[in-house]
Amino acid sequence: MNTIFGPVNSRRFGSSLGIDLSPAAKQCNFDCLYCELAPAATVSTQTDVVEVSKIIDELKTHLHNKIDVITITANGEPTLYPHLSELIDEINKIKGETQTLILTNSATLVDENVFNTLLKLDQVKLSLDAVSNDVFKKIDRPHNNVEIDNVVQKVIEFSKIYKGNLFIEILFVYELNDTKEEIQKLNDVLLNIHASRIDLGTIDRPPAYPVMGISYKELHSIALMFDNSLPIHIASRVHAEPNNSSYTEDEILNTLDKRPLTQDDIHLLFDEESKKRLEILIKESKIVKKVLCNLEFLIPHANVKRKRQKQPKNLTF
Image (cartoon, rainbow, N blue to C red; front, side, top):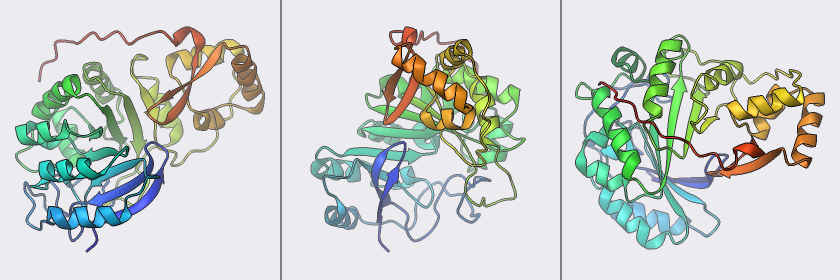
């Protein structure tokens, strides 16, 4: 089977050419409730392995200078691929200006070889759906050797030494990890993670199990619960019904001070008069546009030079 797919246009990452490291079957250390793939028993290693040379040969025939990012993924967990370090070395020899990205569930960061291998990538996206052990096991249904406390510690450690763009993704499932208690626990952990962006999402494809996502409005409410120093972005537009609320100029400035928004967010949240007030504030330079990892956010001008104050907490895991 082919390992290369795309390119696809990703709003978050640009033109993406994908590499599927498990094209023949699902091989994963999680069996997530929300997975778009059919349920399958979890594994700790890959048994159906594609040769590095085959992947590189296919990549060479599809790679061109209009590709923004080579995305390493899998029908399952890509870091279970046993030759990942060698593969990344070979990709780096031919990628030119194209960035490399991996989409991983974070669990294998506890493996020193995987940890060091991911340091060689330009971009890394780590999933972190929950930090409470019971919630984590309900949602992600991990292999029996995965402990969330150990994973969280390694995510924090990785974030402090990694030199590329680090993305954290949290996928919310209705009545599982969308509680105030779990959001507060996630917030406390995220304050210790040096992330370029934190993407909040929900179920937008038919899930493996009978669970539901949450609405855009609920995602926006959750976003406001996180510390405003965190680079939160609402990545999902599923069930995104326009709210079209009225905002005064002061309310617009206050809202963007608490949580920078994209134009897509503005379209869903603001009524037409509020959008006009926003445009006036932009023309007056009271609100400016800031590009963060391919996405354009609107922020108050006063916040341009404001840097996140990192205050690591003494977390107990």
